[in-house]
Image (cartoon, rainbow, N blue to C red; front, side, top):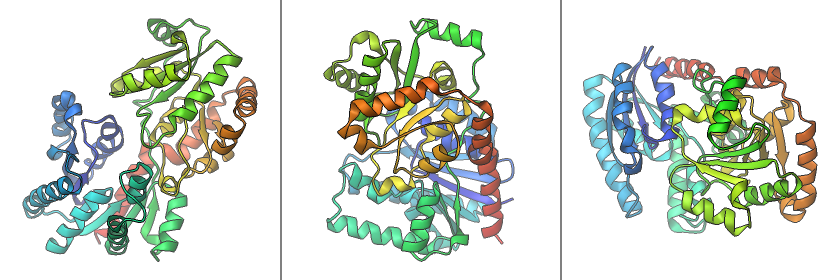
Length: 403
């Protein structure tokens, strides 16, 4: 058992925080004393009371404050200071032994607290954060700030007691580029909980499908979550449009929060008829219903350097629900998973751009011929994406660095 201070830039009231942080902490709290500091977004606070009940019932101590990037780096500095002050209060009171820092900014906070108190630091990188800012246009690669942040990142890698990353591709990069011993890096991809991502039975599928206005024979291709920043939603829309032209029984279902107006404008801009798509919101507990009634999941991600460290959460959730994925090459370990396991289809975005019609026709034929083999999905899930595997790995890491 260890006394852990977990610091997360992702809020517990966000869908991602609920599925990829809180779900883990609930299980980790069974063997460890967990204190939590998180950055919450105002737009997600509607379910704060529900989250508080879950956290209290699992004996987790929760401190949070409202995240803001209104003033850029100055906002970050203010929040860093607030989190450090909270950490200074928690560490001696709770006899903290390990700081588990989820992503870059929490790791900076964790390193400062490590220097003050001499605790151990686990850097759970969640991706190449600085280069992700370049991808999103928030940072220029040739800027002075980029160079400073990269030096800080390098320093964090070297001063952390252990590193967790999402992909084997990024583990190799970190080990080689930053001269880190491979034994001090563990790969834990984003996982899912099959108790939450349960597949509806056939009767439930039909009823839920009809409740959304679909017929039993309609085929659904789904995009879940945000459509901006990390995703090439334009390529997805182009792909669906061609698919729809080939077969009008396909329908595009987008499950999203906060971008409905933008999504509808984008779909209409590409000339998609209103009857070919639906845009919905869903709470975390109902996501399995939408995945259960879908025939395919689609997510295209620009294959940049930063995406080598990306493990799409939705892929693990798709696998849990026996839902095939259509995604692209050059992202994290996706080529390995989709080459070794028959659970979906890989697209080369360059080929898609240069020869859209031919590529869609090729995938369409593969979709027609595809037969879902649940054993194949279960093998992939049980080998890589079962949350129990992640919990076991984290507990072993805690034991190792707490010696």
